[in-house]
Image 1 (tube, rainbow, N blue to C red):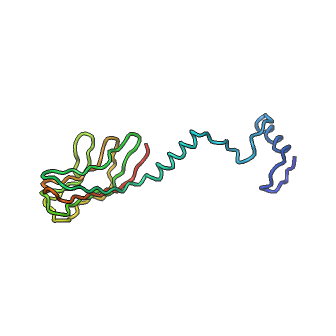
Image 2 (image 1 turned 30 degrees about the vertical axis):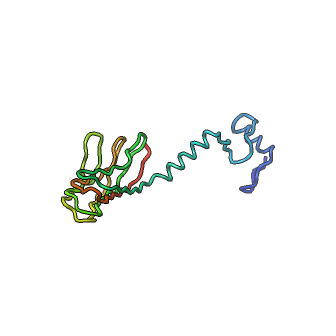
Amino acid sequence: MVTNREYGVPKTEEERAASHEALYGSALLPPRGTGQHQSSVVECAAELIVRELDESMRADDDVNMSASTGTNDLKFEQVKAGRKFVMTHLSGYDDTSSPTKLRVGYWNGHRLNWLKTIPAPLISETVEYNGRVYLREGMYPIVRFEGATSGDDLYATLNGYWIKT
């Protein structure tokens, strides 16, 4: 066996067989290459799904609706099983008139928790929360407009990121 081989020079088939026999006690050689086996179709599909999930970890969402008279809720996507959502920004505003009260918060599965409330905000005045709120399965962010006028343009924005659990 050659002992003073330059790094990166491939071994001959005889040298590979001798090394494999010494290391593993078998002369059955794996195919040449990196030592990795070919992935099955299921493994390739799983890798693709994980890659797509990693690419969609960031969440930036805007919601717009035309108000009806009274209380209007703009709800965002509910957190699904196997994930958590870290909310970093939530805001809302009425672009047409001034509601009685504007609130930003989240549903925790039992009740609504308001992070910020402003009574009678001005037209287009943004009510926003910036920070970190960890939402678990079944929870969702919400912006509530109380005392809105029918036909008002209501807007809400959400920023954050998903975590696989």
